Each structure stands twice: as structure tokens, then as C-alpha cells.
Length: 234
Image (cartoon, rainbow, N blue to C red; front, side):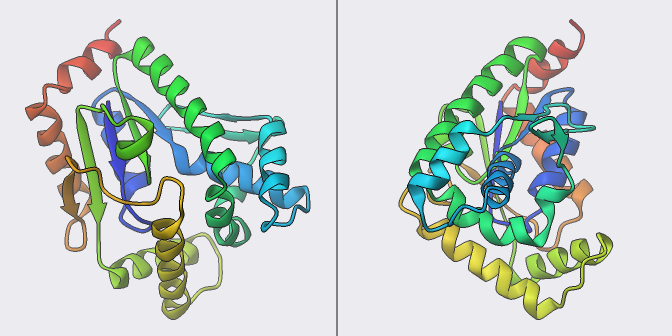
């Protein structure tokens, strides 16, 4: 079990998926879970400031999240929404939705069940998010907190938006990164922060392959490689 936390734009998703594939482990993107709930809230026309209404939508939402790193599917009411949850509307609304305590309580419980099931099935899992090492799985044998400068993260976000065909500028991406950081770090419930025993890895000047090498070595030192790869041979 590897807990991978950090703010937006540090490369968490790419690194987590590739690391899970390398270790023959399962993969869970907890951020996608908050995004799919946010999409449900937006589709319902719910006021984002109405915590009770947001929680009610979350409690009724029927969604599924895949745990295969090569193709982590996301569906809402049976519809594939993997692309839609990455759009600007959801990105802008996900922080206030994820700050609702009842939403976090609901999803954290589900995340823990998924982790337990996947570990039992394949022997290991890489879980990414913002409160994995501090709240979801505080007993994880390896906790990593990825960081990068705001400028670098904004450049990455701008490149991602451009690749996805969305109009953007570096200034807009930087403003979005700063806004998300403030919202995620200041929320009352499960704020974004590193676990006390997390290993900090600054990805500002590192390529994905370099980050993967570093994390794979950390996993080896913690004795996690054998657990994950053994699950793949069952």
C-alpha cells in the first residue's frame, strides 16, 4: 500500500498509474471520486454553497471507479464520464464540493473499502489524493508527498488543457492552481497537508521516469515490491 499525496499539477496521477503498473498493483484515484460527485451535483443544479443539498446528492449518486492502472474507468449512473470530470466546470467546483464534511465522510469510507478489497485481491495498491496518508490510510507503510513550484504546476496544467483542446493561458492556469491550493489547504475537514512521516519528493525539475525510479526504490526499501508482485502471480 502506497499513499501518494500532493497538490494539483505535481504529476500525481501519471506517477501513481505508472507506479502501480510497474509494481503490478491496483490503483485508486480518489480525486476522481470527488470529481464524479461534483459532476452529479452540477447536473442536479445544486447550489454549491448548500452543504446539506450537496451531501444529499452525494448520498444518492450511483457511480463506479476503476482500479486498473492501465484504464481506470469512471462512470456515473452507468455513463462513462472519465473525460467530462476533467473539464473546467468540474475543476472549478470540485474544491467546494470536496470540502463538505458529509461528502468526505462518505467517500473516505468507500475508499477504505476499495483499498481493502484490492489489497486482498492483488496484494497491493497505489492510492493518490490529498488526504491519503493523513486520513484515508494513515497506516500505509509508504507515504509520499509530491511537491513542485506553483509556476511549474501551472505550466503543466496549461499544457494538459491545451492537449485536451481547452483554451487556456499560463496566467489563468497559475490563478487556478493558487485558488485550488488555498481552498484545499484551508478547508476544515481533511485539509491538504503531508503526513508527519511522509517522504517529500519535489518533482519541479524531474521527469516522470526519474520520479518513478525514486518511488520504486522507496518501495523496495520498505519491502513493498514483493507484496505487489506476488499478487500479480496469483
